[in-house]
Amino acid sequence: MFCFVNNDLVRQQDARIGITDLSIIRGYGIFDFFRLKDNVPLFIDEHLDRFFISAGKVFDEVQLKRGELEARIRQLIEVNEIPVSGIRVVLTGGYSPDGYSIGKPNLIITQEYIEFPSEESYGLGVKLITYPYLRELSEIKTINYMTGIWMRKEIARAGAFDVLYHHNGLVCELTRSNFFIVNQENEIITPDRNILRGITRRKVLGIARKQFKVYEAPVSLEDLNSAKEAFLTGTTKKVLPVTHIDDFVIGDGRVGVITKLLMQGFSEFEDEFLNKNT
Amino acid sequence: MFCFVNNDLVRQQDARIGITDLSIIRGYGIFDFFRLKDNVPLFIDEHLDRFFISAGKVFDEVQLKRGELEARIRQLIEVNEIPVSGIRVVLTGGYSPDGYSIGKPNLIITQEYIEFPSEESYGLGVKLITYPYLRELSEIKTINYMTGIWMRKEIARAGAFDVLYHHNGLVCELTRSNFFIVNQENEIITPDRNILRGITRRKVLGIARKQFKVYEAPVSLEDLNSAKEAFLTGTTKKVLPVTHIDDFVIGDGRVGVITKLLMQGFSEFEDEFLNKNT
Image (tube, helix red, strand yellow):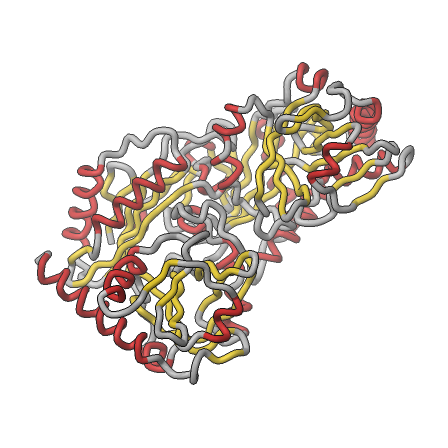
């Protein structure tokens, strides 16, 4: 498996960066991650848009050119040949002269095998646990996943798939996914603030709007109790039904009708994208 | 300059770790940092206590032995010979098999030149700006300084020294320091929750208790308005007076009498520690 470290195409097992990088000592960096299907990078334009927005917000100057970045990604896809996989593009804080100041960012592009949720998860829905947490700079895709990874044991203990963060009584997002509910009026609602705006979220909103009333609006913890359906979206999760949150059951505890329609709708949308881009 | 990467003593410019380390891709890691004076590591026992507590909280198993860690630190101090400097001990999330799971932690020990606040800062006091932020897992010394570093420009624009975080109306801490006020009754108060418990904070509390009424208790934003004095504490800041916060002036805008006593008291305490440990 090859990867890029700045301008160099290197074998991943040999790829290294210096230990004064601000990602290592101060957790400072941003990234994006997208999926390949049949070797086609899905929604790469939107992911690179977001990557450069994140970069612009945490670095004074981003010298990286979009065309060059895209060329390296295409080269990596060609060299590695892993038709179903993920591409991670990381921009770190760079080598710090004093352990705190930003240096010249290091660019790392890796390709990774990915694992989808199980058939059972899609068929029966998953359980979430809730936890009060506001992801800092939540609109930026920073590398900071400290709380989510720290919670791995609690998630496992609860037999849950992931954790749903909330802040001041409002639901935000999961560790790496966005969250949606369907209310008793068959309206689809997804939190509008304190979240990372996922690319899958955006696509699903577009698909849903063709058939349903859709709102980006606050979702309170109480709203979960009265929700008929719930699901999450993410690059490697697609549309995944949620049937249990903490100790309560969403709707009748089975995957909802609207969730199923959106799972199907997103799958077709992906296929259309592939048809147009191959 | 030499450093340790796991068991290896290497030149810092050659010291590297692999790019799949969870610090680089997920900001996952903990650390501690202490200061050398006359080549003596100040309060090293307390710092290593805290390092192992942090490590125990974010890793399932910490195989690193304290004696071995201390031996490496002593070796580094001997090899580098930088009598006034800092030692940073980082334990990263290790090489992740899947971009999210924890691997075997990588240990990095570096020695660094340090810069103290200016004479002027000690003589006239510094300005802080405030910002609503709760550091996640605040009692653990994680590597996550995303918000603090992101705010560097706003801090500079305001002509401030640092940012004072607050949460739900209560003052917490600075990016890398603890915060104290002196109220109109000459009582010393420092926030008791949502903070990293600094080693300098602990020493200053001990020194202050000999002469004053001291409380670890909530400090509200309103309390700042009525404070007579304010100061911050930290490993490379020692005791640093604060005279301005946002647009308001603390007390009469000059370094307070009790702050001066504690600056002096901490300096003497350091000297006593040095005398006992050389």
